[in-house]
Image (cartoon, rainbow, N blue to C red; front, side, top):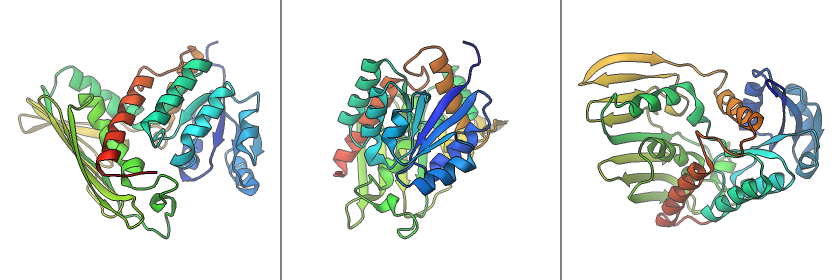
Length: 324
């Protein structure tokens, strides 16, 4: 077994897929076997740029390609569930871009398909695998900042309706919560687990997507104050605060190249932990290791983790009355 090459397929060839494919090139035992877009010209352009062996103008053709082992799904949110399940039914491993689905029910169906067909499935929460996050979780686990009782995290930028149509498109699952709100929620979840209670408020667009959403997650002895916006900017730092000190993740925190540790208000030390490439490389390596070990889920971002986060997002979706 050892270090054999894993053969990848990519479905949906937008901006995120390009960044992902650049990182794929950095990994020795990863091979881009096939790409698919509904537009053949786009598939040929993308495939040429990233040395893919085959380019398809149909997702189904890629799912049927017997050489492809794992498929990275990077289409708009509204098609994640359907395409993931179809790929899993074809016996393919799947790495599905976040959010894995627009409803908890679909998330359950996706996990069930992975188990039923005994193939690997993971939501592409790349932040879970970057060195800075792995390192700080270990330190928090070792009690370096004491008991965590406060997290502050946001993800905000000023989006343009003309330039980023998908983001403002209700049919495609646009809006702040599903596109970027999942990141601060993810951070709270990996540090503190499932909240006891959630309070959320949103400001809506005339087409009913959320332009910005603010969230308070209430735990037994902790609170997280979280925010997502596609109409204004923030400093994009994240703070995790405990009884003995705090950690400040460098901006933009979701792909932080390091963090600062403060103990008793003294800046102890700055840790520098750069990512390989853009940072997608770390989740790619995780997927490959799982496949080589015949595991259908990652221990670091498990099926249950995917479902827990989906459930949290669903609760907020209901509170702020989003429907897709």
